[in-house]
Image (cartoon, rainbow, N blue to C red; front, side, top):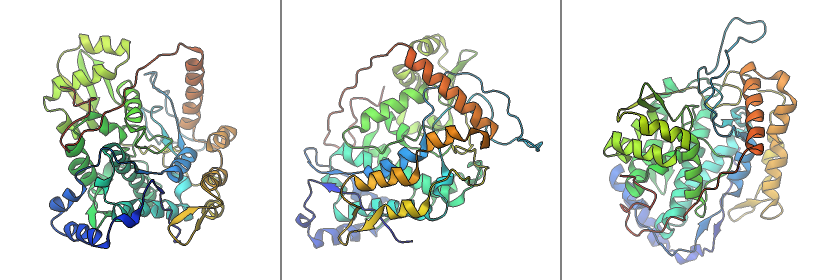
Length: 412
């Protein structure tokens, strides 16, 4: 079903850019892949232009279930479902960590919607070259496109419990076409983001679709808030069993740090310094007392799905017809029905308040989800009753050179 959703470009006159410039950009993109990626270099530090992601945020807010910060507790024993001897789903000390996505909500016609939205995001640089935006806007764009692509790729093979057998094929597939340049997830990660930013924080914005990776947020990244959002993700991941812990004086970390080794040139020293920067006091003390050895053997390939990837679609799923009707083709580009916020409200209404629906229907859920829900509720209650930790967030200054790093990194 063709129903794309065009992100709104603010403070922008597309007519300023000639057809000749766009044609030249696309011609460059049709050369060798690595050469073509150079089309995404450069930036305009004082650019007033931004990209609106309210549509993406509306979808994420209704399909992502936040679990809060880890308390590093060990998950309870996994038990089989009623009438079965088979135990399925993630086990171990990361089972109840990390945000979850209701991938069942993306089945059927809703799958066409997220693919259409992804394709709309792909078109943005063909309308306005990315170098006309500042670095923060570009970073938010690539993170949102990457994460939406991961979600749509998983939705395309769903239901699935583990992504291990799909690695690295899912990340290497040239599923995207941005301004005429065929791109894979790994191209965005390793050929665009790492060379351009050289900051370890960027890795925390790359959702891997699995429990063992950084969190997917319940909102889109924005140019104004992207560094704040990444710092929040970094603190959550570093202080979780998924991210890092100390055992027998050895620092055990996620395999995702190994994947991002290019961001840590002196790996063990840089990793320890990086972890200390975002560790909570108790964990920081353990890191200080640990040896300089850093292992990267912590992994959990289970899909970060609310139901564990092994449950058929329930009656609590969204109404795809209502969801699709929340958007309309406006003739010139695509916009929300009834104004800027009507579509966002339409998404929320059509998709339903998943958290409330889930809590009201726990008796129909797998036992691991009931366990996780109860732990989350208890943890959130403790957080509300506990002390407030004040943290300082500094804006990341703009830099003109592509190889210049932000003040937040690299940390060495």
